[in-house]
Length: 285
Ligand SMILES: C[S@@+](CC[C@H](N)C(=O)[O-])C[C@H]1O[C@@H](n2cnc3c(N)ncnc32)[C@H](O)[C@@H]1O
Image (cartoon, rainbow, N blue to C red):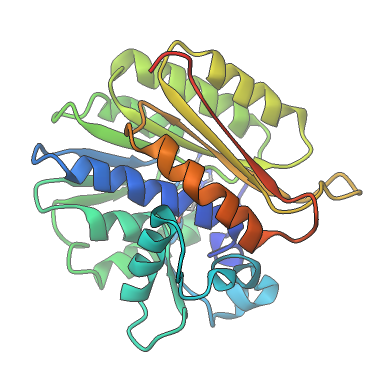
């Protein structure tokens, strides 16, 4: 589990889908004055330098965010992300890529709160260092806990404001992450049924992927489920060929925003002729 470092993957196609969806949800929360909490169970380092040797090693951003250009004619869900990224790259281009904590910190109002969990000892150190340079990083608005996010959320739900988003974004290198994600959602919903829960998952050839998504779809909730495929599944049976976002209690605008964005993203991010997308939602809405 401790081998995963998000810097290798920052800005890839999976981050694009995840972060565009995240910002849409946060914008929706911001439409009402009532304060809310964001709980990020798997925070990563916060922000990534794409010139860094780790990011350069695989240069996954080249087949991700870098393919979207300046976003001219991009659907709203995508141009929102591109605008946010541009604000972290004053000199133009994309040299710094903001992870979920940074995008959230930018979206929050002063009365909202961010609770971050990160278990990896080196990653949490980088996150804390990065946060110390952020204007909101030393305020009570944000806390970082070096702990297992699946366990950590239990004590935070429901948040005092009774309004909140839980982002669950494991690396799934540990196959138990699939089961643990489902359990966290089931237990979370018992404590905080009206919360918004956003789960990212990888498209890889593992039976656990389908087991997780089918179980999530069977929950008695309102949900939107988006998947973006960038290539055919690798013939060796390994490797990421896309990813999905499963959002429980989504903003009512999310389905239509994704319906506009996904075909455009699949076109831009396609690595072969098997690229495509799917978008479904609960019967109950
Ligand atoms: C996919 S990355 C997170 C990326 C981040 N959410 C973003 O969008 O910028 C997953 C992170 O979870 C951390 N991690 C792994 N297992 C964990 C656990 N049980 N609890 C908290 N963090 C964990 C890893 O060290 C890694 O930094």
